[in-house]
Image 1 (tube, each protein chain N blue to C red):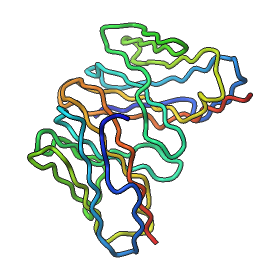
Image 2: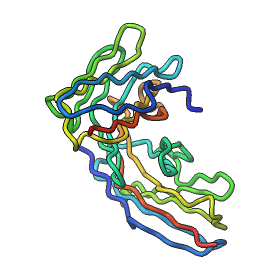
Image 3: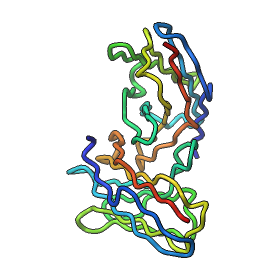
Image 4: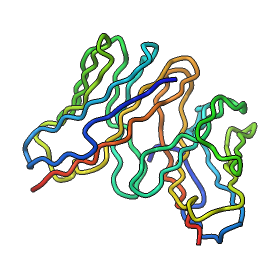
Length: 112
Length: 112
């Protein structure tokens, strides 16, 4: 089955700096890659996603890039703010069966 | 609000007991997923249903079972509870093939 690896497990940045979280996947059949933000005690919330026919997608301060050849995708957060502090999960999904495989999460701390 | 609802919000019970967690997917979503999240851990996939049928099984213990009913709501039954079963249990739903995954608010289970 699909295996998703996520790095780093923890990340601390100064407010205003950029943060990058990277994920790799193993199954070339994966074609949908969402990112989730989870604040303490809350539900994971979808913040951005990308499909395999697109290389990059942006939404204000967050962007996701996908390299299908290398089987990796990354989340980029620019101009970080304290409210960006949370755990971020990447996931990969294969169209058939619509199963989701999650990374182990990255705990991001933005230092004011 | 993702539109996925879960009840109850909190549940405190004793070891050896049995509980039932309930989930209603977003309107129109046919797939329901159950995840377990222990303290400071990632999202452990338990089981997926699609339109009433079991679609995929993850790390679900034999003491746990689930079903999806004709009205598409789902129940997760946990029996012979142990201290280690204390966790947040999330339900999520998606429309189906390549649909985005949306999480409910979770049920926090505490086993004493």
